[in-house]
Image (cartoon, rainbow, N blue to C red; front, side, top):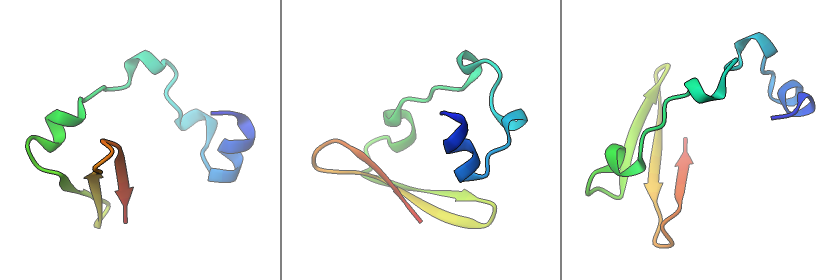
Length: 61
């Protein structure tokens, strides 16, 4: 992520991970299981993560 993108998205540099290797990596299969979609709640808002027919992920609000 470059500085221009961070500014546009309102992301503060000190809030970014210092070491990207510390980010958690969770396989999509672990999240979805046998389902094609799941609901993720974040700060009271529900988002839907869907697995498409083309085996791509789409996150919608």
